[in-house]
Image (cartoon, rainbow, N blue to C red; front, top):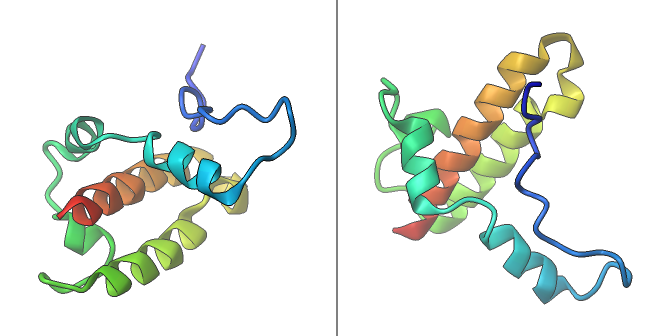
Length: 103
C-alpha cells in the first residue's frame, strides 16, 4: 500500500479540541526535520532556493512568502489531476523551506 502524503505527519492531537495556536506551531515544526529534508532533496539538480524560485541570500520574509505561494500552487488537494506529481513537489517545497528556514 502506498504511503499517503500526510502519513507520518499527524503529530497534533485534536481529541480535546483544536487547542492553542502555539501548540499548532510547535506541531508544525516537528513535522519535518533537517535530516529528512536533506534526504528528500538529495540528488536533486535544483537548490532549495531554486525550488522556491528565490535568489540566493533571500530574506526570511521572502522565503516564507515564496513557500506559501509554491505550496498553494502545488498542494495535492488542488491538483487532483496530477496527484503524484503534486505530492512529490509538495515534499520538495516543504523540504526546501525547512532547510532555508534553519539558516
